[in-house]
Length: 200
Image (cartoon, rainbow, N blue to C red; front, side, top):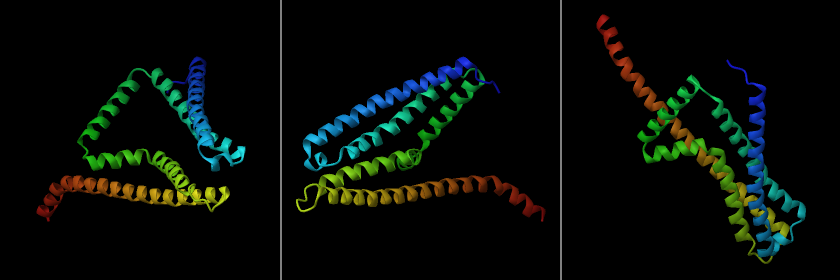
């Protein structure tokens, strides 16, 4: 196993910092513009305390910062691989692409969902919060605090539904893989069993 040199460590750190800056800039800009638009568009958002508005921007910016930093670090690591490591990675990518091409549409959806499970859950939570907030904001008889609580409760309920659906899809996908593995094993074992029975 080859140890990383000081130059490679510094390069990885620089790539991760560049990714963190990119994630912060893009996500921070989008979140800030969204906050400004919401402040101008909806009275209930204007009435929220500034700390909650800042928290909303941070909730969007912080994950983007860490994700982009990790992506840039992994890209740098990949650029440093050479020889057999690159060949093995290329072979694994080719095998994965071949497997993907043989899957049916429903299996592709299940496979994609299982690999992006957390993104779907967080995205579903954010979407359900936005939709619930938009619907509840029309109620003239509730205070801003009541509307925020109602929107949060609806988002939590819908997120639990998304988590249960994801668990069901994952269980079904795993059962399908187990069944195909059992069929494959039974094809291998059938000649062996027939030989054993003949011997007995």
